[in-house]
Length: 119
Image 1: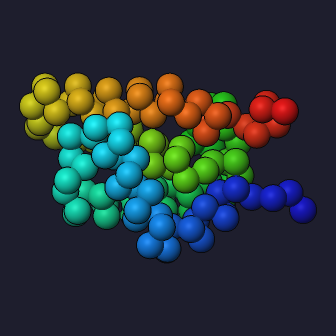
Image 2: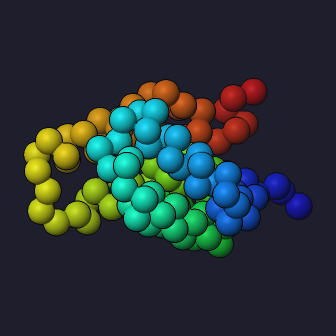
């Protein structure tokens, strides 16, 4: 049976370390809402939903198979969806959130492709 990164990462979301990694990712790449604990908690919850859907086989990324969706990609996807669904916000906040998404893609591109491409 093939190893499911998505299932392993879904189990990880219940640990304190997932909260810590979420906060560190937001702070390191200067997300404008990094200081908001409720935002961080909601983002982690949304990422867990992304991982649950991926583990069930739903394709959310063009270049990443569902079973290969990892924690970083799930956080990125959750924030991307959140930003698209967001109502009113300042242009500065929108641009800052888009910059965070782009920074994450550029900083860890290996999180957004299937592992077999890295061999």
